Amino acid sequence: MSSENLPPDVIKRILKELKELNSNPLEGITLLPLEEDISNIDALIVGPNGTPYEGGHFKARLILSSEFPGVPPKANFLTKIFHPNVSKKGEICVNTLKKDWSSDLGIKHILLTIKCLLIVPNADSALNEDASILLLENYDDYCKHAKMFTSIHAKATVIAGTESTGNTSGVSSSNVLTSNSTNIEANNKSEKASTTSSSSASTTSTTSSTTTTAATKKKAELDTSKAKKSLKRL
Image 1: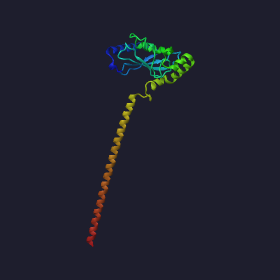
Image 2: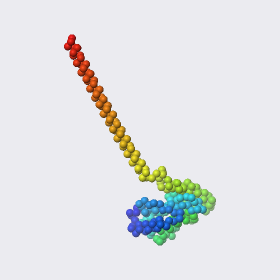
Image 3: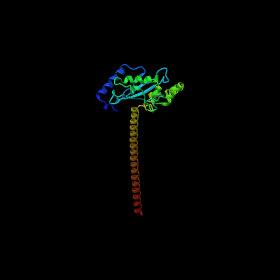
Image 4: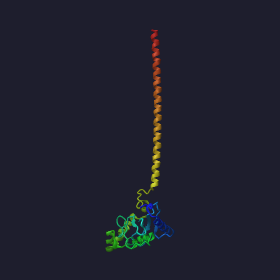
């Protein structure tokens, strides 16, 4: 949903909450720059110390509807994570976003709740059965899997370059467009230069051919004149 489809009171509520979060940042949670659509709110959550997610940087997204705060937003991890309450597609399952939701709650509370999930997973409301079973039956193996996912998908360099942004080359789209524009301009100049050069060569060739033809014709006329003089002498 675009911000244009949000009621004025909802927009006002969201902007107020975002301003508060920018003025008083949450520990280990950073709001990412908004593009034009405030109905999608991205945040970077640092893996809490003492958990299998320690050292990781996890990008999360809240998707707010036109009925917010009467209806809770949807929450997803954009960074791959091995967690009982996060599906393989990134969907987050937490009671705060379902039966325990209240219109008094807001963006701040949701972000804190998601961070708490990294500290205390809830195997009873699992979206990832493999992670849930390991959490209950073999915590050491659960930690190994979670740490492996963190090391592969949630390192700061991965987040900044490709994993969460969807930019596989690590280059911004504006740079790509600028580069393409430059290449097109260079190609156009090259084509013009080639056309001019070809035209010049063609003109030179035509001039040379005309000169050669004129010289040949002149020579023929001289030869004819000489032949006529010789005949008169005879």
